[in-house]
Length: 120
Length: 107
Image 1 (tube, rainbow over the protein chains, first blue to last red):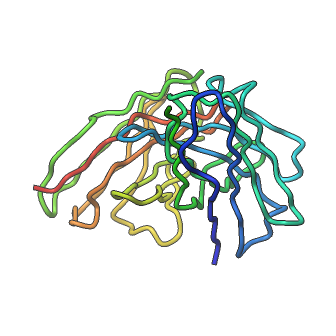
Image 2: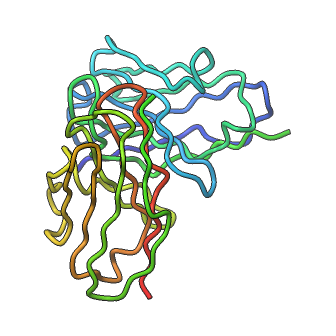
């Protein structure tokens, strides 16, 4: 059974940093591209970042480019999102999701999400 | 960036009804369109990919179609389990973008 479990969320002050993790199981992690997608309270979905299976291709939304870094450790079946210079508008539930496809694709499995709240 | 204009933003329908949700892409995305169902407090669930392909395990009451840059999700024989928010998503290019969502409620 495919499982994705995010962790690392919490309350953080503006300007500070936070690192999210997503532990994958139930599939060959190194064969799939992975993504971070967020959802602000009561709002729609916003794609944040994507990384290919071997980390060769990495893409970011303009809203986080230069502040967030997506990475992965295939030996540990883990996806990461390093978030720096956090702003109040980064407050959201952060999902990791697997995509089916080559560089881009649809999201066939999602984790339950980890909440990030940016507030003083 | 590709804009996905989703409509309606909310709708109410009766048990057994047929409903249609639409997404209009601001430029050509081919069939690189997926649909997700999200229930309160849960993560989104893939329903349709490639504009018209039903994900494994999704009831055949759900279907997707395309007419040019207009994409539709149709649900036949509406049931209470179909309540939730539906999101369209284009994965033709980066940045991937989503529609604003359609909240479906049963009367």
